[in-house]
Length: 95
Image (cartoon, rainbow, N blue to C red; front, top):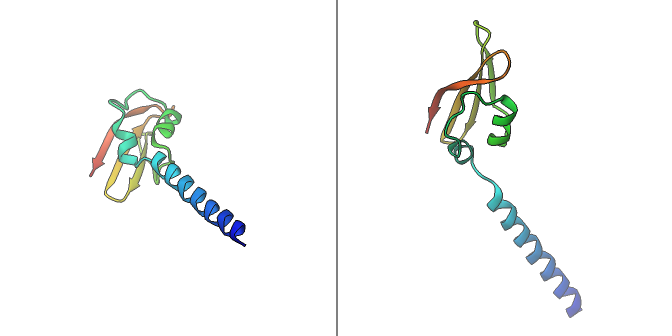
């Protein structure tokens, strides 16, 4: 009976340690975007990799450009992309 209890405790401890490790790897959008000095000239796929998430909103503009907006609690950033999905720069950033 004591051996079973030991395995149960070990399983819970292992799950807890795994959860802590996975939690540390997650960065906020703000942290991900803060690592980049300039967005202009970067491709959409590269910015997706930097963000670690797809944009929450995509807005087609009349001139053919696209506004892509990433949001999370307390932070949002809007980037403008041309027709070839190359970033033209930051349209808006709010903390």
